[in-house]
Structure formats: C-alpha cells, structure tokens
Image (tube, rainbow, N blue to C red):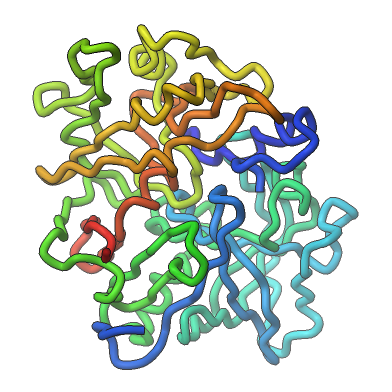
Length: 369
C-alpha cells in the first residue's frame, strides 16, 4: 500500500539548499478539554504530544490514520534514533516486555524494527492502560530526525491492520470506557493555533455544522470510503478533466499520514495531460509532478464525498517551488500508487474531518470562517 510521502522530499531539500515545504476556544461539544494541539511542520506533517509510562514521559508523534500501531524509539536503538526522545522500559514501573519482536514497513520504503511492550499511554486527556507499543531498535532513513521530526508514529486505523495483532490506542480507550463517544476528529491548518486532534468528540468552533456530510466506511481496516467525484478545471477554455464520477466508481483511503493525494500513474498522467510544462519531478521521484508556478493555481481539484463537493485551496495544492529560484512548483497530486486514491493532508487542510469509529463512518465539513 502506497502511504507515506514525506521522505521523498529529502533530495529536493538538498538540491535547493533549503528545507522544502514537503520536508519538514468557542463552544465545544465535549465536557472537558481533551484536545491535543498539533504543530505544523511546513504543511508536510502535523505532530502532537503523548505521554507513556509511569511516571509519564512525553513524546511527539505523527497521528496516522493510515496505520494502526504505536512505535517509539527504544532505549537500545542505535544511532539512527539520535535526536529523538527514547522510550526506556526500565524507567517505567508499568512497562511489561511481552517477548515479541516487530517489523513495520511503509509505502515510501521506510521501516522500523524492535521489541513490543505493554505500558500506559496518555493522549488527549485520556489513559490507554496496558497498551501494546513498539520500542524501535533501528530506524530507517525515513524515520531519522532529519526527515521525520516527531519521535514516533501513533496509528489510528482499525485493528485489522495492526501488525502487532493488538488493539490500537483509540480502540483501547473506547473498550475500556475511558472515551464515551467513539469519535476522534482532526483540524489541520498552516495557521498557528488552528490545528488539533480531538479525542471523544468534535470541536464545533472549528467547522460549519450545516455542511457536515458522513460517508460509510467500506471495510474496517484502512479508513476507506467511496469517492464520488474528482475533477479539475480545463485549461485555456477546454472542458473540465473528470477522473472520477458516479459512474466510474472509485474508493479513497483517508490518511492523515500522507502529505499528498496519491493515485495511479495513469490517473496522474490524465490529470496533468495538456498542461503545458507539467513534468514528473525527477528529484523527488515517487510519482510527484512539477507544474509551472503561474499555472498551478488553475489546476486545483475538487473532490466529492457523500454528494458534497470540496475544492482545494491553491495554497494547499501548491507545495512551493521545485527548487530554489525555480519557476516550476510541486503539485499536490502524485502518481506512483494504485487505483485506490490515497487522500492526504493537501485535502484534509481544506476540511474538518471526523473519524466516527462507533458508526464506522467519516465526516467532512467546511472549516469555520
């Protein structure tokens, strides 16, 4: 499964001599403050803080709906974990070694290996007791601090995709009764103070309630739903380019752990067809495309879910110059995937997203003005 799209930008940062954009209160509907503020890392990923162990120790993680397991750098991790805060089971009185190893791999080639433990995990004001987690003994380059600022990854997919064969953190919170409403929601923004993960409800101050639409999950594994439409405007007076409509059935995986919208190479080629100067980005690779900066704002796609059309803003679809001083910009839709559409952060910045575990559905709404 093609999923993570962050390490691909390392070469671009080196070529340009600077970090690329791809590298790195109000009325509420809940009874206590249990949101986790998220820090924007150049609109490439959003990370927040959790605590693990007794006494609790803080770690930063990428909250990832495209996986289901919690992994942190272990105390015995080699130099590949340098710069990250490490989980030391000997310093937690609630830690238990369950004598199981693990090996996790991701779509960009990143991987991590280590040992599994059970410990207490605190997130969003709640405690997941006896939670299975992985303590890494080695990080591949995609997880090293120069490419991946958070300490680790906290998966928020369904149990079916847990490679630990264990309950993910959120399901532990629900099954234990710690969380009364089996819902978590995300607001992602490049504006300071506007990004959060909310456990156990929604933040009505951050979205327009009348625009909320819910789409049922197809399979409880990834957050997989029907994609009703994907179009972009035509160029120079030509007709709109339609890649998906109601008669050409498509499915999307909603993935907070992916930066771009990722599809097959053939779909990407169709999307950029007849766009003068659009070319695959040979520096980043992995299906990423460049488009002349003076044309990219005219290509923003519209995605339709549950009969509601959501159009990306130019600022989220345009990921900035391909290199220092370039007149080409990196576009937010990439090939290199499969016929499934992986819908990542370039879209999710344009909506408020509700992951309703209890009713097996996803909700999208327009952000508050």
